[in-house]
Length: 390
Ligand SMILES: Cc1cc2nc3c(=O)[nH]c(=O)nc-3n(C[C@H](O)[C@H](O)[C@H](O)COP(=O)(O)OP(=O)(O)OC[C@H]3O[C@@H](n4cnc5c(N)ncnc54)[C@H](O)[C@@H]3O)c2cc1C
Image (cartoon, rainbow, N blue to C red; front, side, top):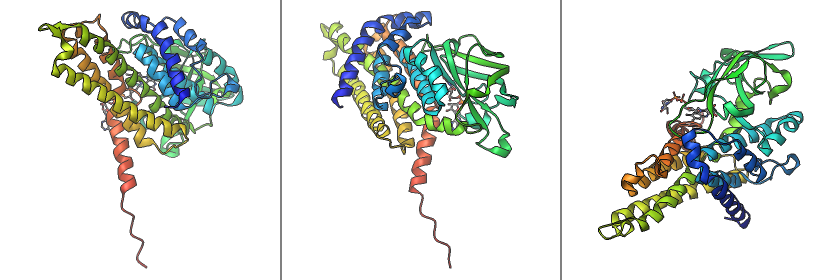
């Protein structure tokens, strides 16, 4: 790890442990993140990590962004999760595909943490098959697009000041994948509303809700990228989004280590610390090994991506698959090491387990990740077709 990244990690760790970790339990119990948290993260210049300085960003690498997500997630899984949706899935996408006027309009407030950003693809009937099953649609009428339909699950949806929203804008049968457009939607737009916050198992405090479009009028100037080229916008952001989401499980695993190591020294049974027992030692060793293996994989993929290697589809899927599974297992081991205390709702490991589970589902499930990995492997290893007989 180069010195600049280590310095960044140290700075974010000190900030997150002082300002966010003390709030983690309250965030989970009250299902709310105090809004000033986002201003504080903005004040630390952590929102626009990958955005050029010209727009108020830090112009750092995607690997740096993973490390920031990891340290925020170590302090609070929820804050790390909402942060990734805001700073990468919305902000970085908006920067990469936005016209100059759109960048100028939205980037300063997103980077300052004045409001949150969100991205909406999923719908009640469009999950893993989001492109094929998308039914939200928009039709051009005069100089506005009139949008109808419902999006579901959208992280930061209730609190977002701007949302990237995908809509079907051409006939799927005729236009195929060139039938979707990305739009920038704002809360005040006529015909747009958000539903109740969804009551979730984990990542409590991260706002997730449905979005309703009832003849919602989206100005023509709010098309993100090109009309009917939304799938390219979506695909271009997919690898960086998946990569960023790997920071979450790493932070959760580190948080589990932070809790169990002191406990293994303090808790005594049979007249000695439980850390003296080899079966407890084995769990500690397995937890650490999973964390370090996941870190090595995520960082190596992050480094390749930061160095403009875009051929990482199966490796970023592998990093998500491995780190998400590892974090669920590490959180379970943390519960086991703490015995009855690990099973209490007012102890940390239960929250870590509930938070870790989302990473096996959100941003594409582990089953879909396996499909992506196997598809790429089989494609790359397919025997060459015999040349036609002359
Ligand atoms: C907390 C949370 C936050 C989210 N945030 C956002 C957000 O900000 N923006 C957004 O657009 N979406 C968001 N999502 C949606 C998320 O991306 C989807 O939940 C995810 O893609 C899976 O879709 P689904 O839930 O509809 O499951 P489904 O697609 O219905 O899958 C159900 C099960 O079937 C399996 N399955 C599906 N197809 C196949 C197949 N071909 N082969 C094998 N197994 C298969 C799945 O792996 C899964 O186990 C969020 C979801 C959650 C829970």
